[in-house]
Length: 114
Length: 116
Image: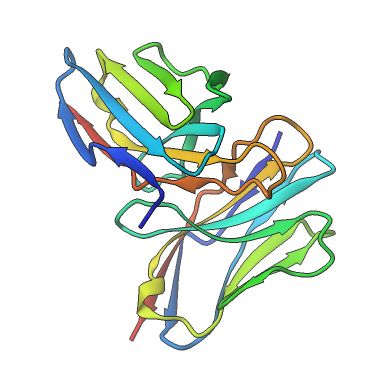
């Protein structure tokens, strides 16, 4: 079983809805990531949090709003999404020091925007 | 900037045979790490193996080995004794090791199908 837990596993929302994706890890990792993966494509980085502070934003539209309330939790708030935002959203975590840099991924949240 | 290239969109292999998945990369970072991940249809990215740019020996993890040729900038994954459960998407990835940017950059992936 993965040590990074993502909820919900599936989400269907309309373009006017507000929803959130949640990610949780209890490995003591201080870096957390959001990736977006379209069908048959590789994951693309969206955001990185280091020590609960946003360190990388890959020019993601403001309709995606990340939040890291504590070292174990990472949220992605969704508002006014477009159908082209339908994708698998992967959360990952990693230690910040003394390691190879391996990222631990969750199973993803599969989002459909109608 | 980093770039990862996987030129094999799809590969077939017979059960119990070995298969090599190709990966080439380009980077200006003097120190970097190379990774392989497996993604089954469930969606989870499963870490398989890691190779550091300064490692003298090729990495091995069970049935997985990484054929690292630094001069050619290649990091091919070798899976020995393929199993039906190996059918999945495989991604090569890399990151710089000397910078604060710890995020991975992924190649386009290779879909492996193991046939009985």
